[in-house]
Length: 192
Image 1 (cartoon, rainbow, N blue to C red):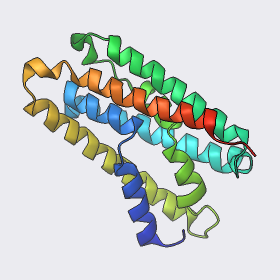
Image 2: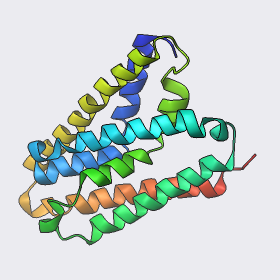
Image 3: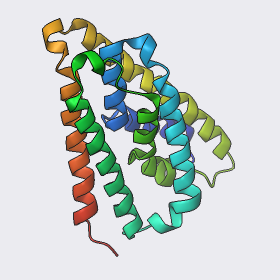
């Protein structure tokens, strides 16, 4: 996709879609606020960078078609999200204010299926302008991540304090649903 406008649009659209990383960013914004959540953007950027590079240069050939490697990666991502979901569910709200760490955002993003789309479809690594596309990606990721933190922060500020304790539970349910989707697709997608 060697078209800067189309590239930026697709990156924005994919990053704006709800997903596991965005769920964590919004939950953190809601529970601990904007300022304490912004360091999580480093975990997001590091996770996407490492994942995309591994997919493009190490796993790319194995992921073409319906190779079992893709199903294994989806299953691993689903299992991790399930563990994170259980942890969020079990954490009392008072402790939930510090439960989302940079490491959790990094690992969640590292396993995020969106990285597959970025690496194999959206980022034109074969283009002579690949470095510029990668730089643009590196600028868009934290901008959109910030939007998710702000959205979560606004929700956290405007929700009744008695109901705020349910935010980590709601995030847990969202992560569990994403986990079920990933695990299901890894088990029930035909392999070639």
